[in-house]
Image (cartoon, rainbow, N blue to C red; front, side, top):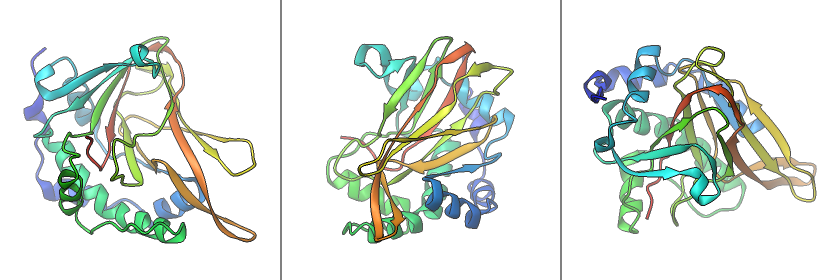
Length: 247
């Protein structure tokens, strides 16, 4: 299949304006309360289709992972190579800028002595200086019976504590099942599940590893994992926007 990379060209100002138009007050409140926030209508249907159509063309990617070979679940995904498709390359720094304040506040609350610069380019330089030079944005493909086990996307010493997944397919039309799932493990308690409903073009921002929760005796740290439930029929594509690079 011919690559549709040219379809993905957008003025950077258009993408930044779209990200800025999100209700970040509500998104921040949702992240603090639940560890995730839905960003509705981040991509148009045409943009979703164009990104999904990149999957068969290996020249867009640095590697392909078949989940069943590694015990990750069923299905597969590919990591984009640099340079990233324009749309992903523009979304990544725009979203980072909006999430950076949450990341810094969470670390301060949890007593983690790590802060993140305002600009994504400066954070990527920190990753690359430490040998984390491989791009981590990825495109995931699921068919009937596929699923993604609960996991965390860490990749190295330098980890940005939030990431974003964007659903490229339409539930009920392209696939059934395949819900985005988060679990949260609180100290001395059973895990709390969260199923996040998404439509085509919606994104979910969520904690990569851990986040602070306010308890009766002050804040404490909880551990999160994410995954995708079994696809009951059809096909599902998702883009993952991870802000740190990998070793």
